[in-house]
Image (cartoon, rainbow, N blue to C red; front, side, top):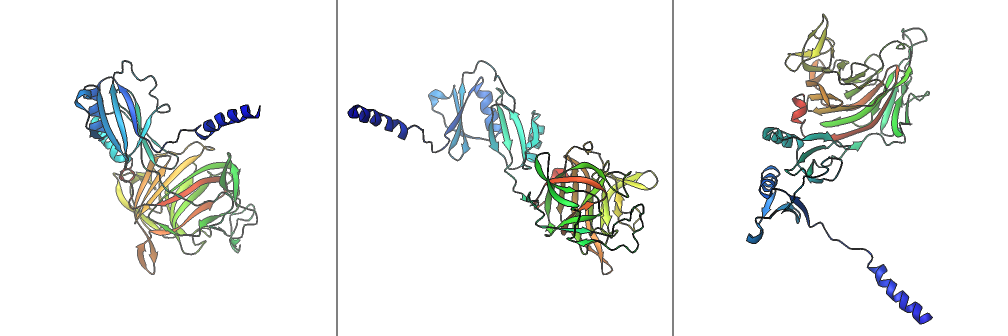
Length: 401
């Protein structure tokens, strides 16, 4: 019996030791195609793949290409039916591209159909199909972000609450500010919202939460949605907040609550507007809307927007791209040098130029500073606040696309 057991165990061990196939790399992808010549032209001239020499006896039925990194594509003649499922959410293969904008321009020039979308990390993807209907996903390299919220607490941020409004009054004369990093009612707090960490700003007291660090030449991206609560003295007003950038100097210099800065407005129906705080100034192409207002128009007259200029310190965005109240919105802010671009849900709402501010009687460039988010009488949630350094603003954003 023991001898029989040993023989049985001896037979099992080899199966255990070699139960898995060990691979050391990806060799090639083979696709069956209906027209070898048309497919060869596509992969050579559209995708710019490097052809590999095929033996003479196979040239009529084979075409080989090199992806790079020792990985090849083999086209095999013989397909008699179209690809059954050419949905981008089904079987496909993916290639890395350096720049989605350049690829899109090329596809438009060639008159080719494509689908473009943004991946969760901000990189762009383009989907195309080859002559047989095989779906090919073209990916920009992953974007490396620095996340400004750690999901647990407000480490890396300062809070400031100014002099608050007395009940039933808007007169703050003689009211002392609550101050820096004093938040007895937790106006600013990390919570779980829709199953994910988010910064809740209650809006009960007016003020702001600002990064400890300063930033310049960056792409900032975040999401926000409105809550339900509204507070005195804005119970009957639009829900209001704001993303302040290039924030410098002392807290509370603007209206007792905020730093000198440029504002990417976050307000119901007005998301993407511009406001200049405490003398901060931008040049914006705009046209008249009504008797007093100015609205962004890339073909309009370039006006200086500040409290002491003809245009004033407020410019209305165009177009309106905000989601309905209660839904999440994605904001992108591009800043490079003195130029900024406001983007709401993928739509450019404004391009701004020559950021500057008054200092010792002179107007000096304002191109770096903290990021401050306003508490202004309404409950609002912010999440996925992230930033990355850039060496230019994407041409598509500057063109308003």
